Length: 209
Image (cartoon, rainbow, N blue to C red; front, side, top):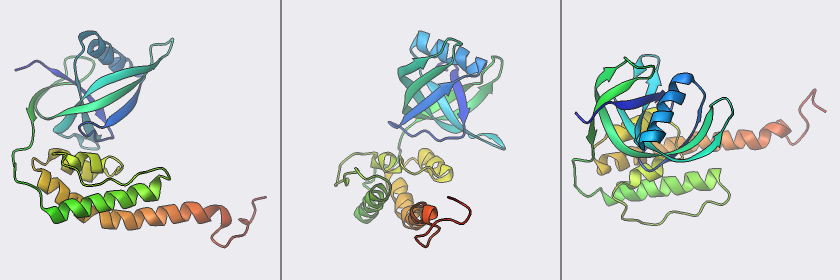
């Protein structure tokens, strides 16, 4: 056993190499982050839901402290590192800790070119829809490209599924299948944003001056 990993349950799914800004305000997590900073160690980010916490998460390292408040609160920027599965939970401290098993991809088969191309195309369409300054992503040999493509997608179920998958090909297939429908929904959202101030007809909304 490599020691207990401090765990931070959140309603987010952290992916490897993705940034996650955090505002630390609860006393138990002030204590946890103080130890993480002192010992220069990782902590685990795990998805919390109504049933508890899921058993697959991603470690985070503190990239930098953005702001320290007089009352001990912190704004920090973290970055995802290693994936893990929780084997045992320890709740003897103010914050949860876990005995974890770190893992990486097991299937080294090259992803299908079609799935890869469809996933990249969907990612570029999404970025073009939501960012005026986004440059299209061209073909790349990143062995875990899927995690990069998933960063702008905040669907927790998809992100958790990608995090747990031990095959890059499987992750790219999931993205290729997910993105077309997601893009349809996002286009509707962007359309509503554009027409809402005009009530959809180019005029003022009744009752608003």
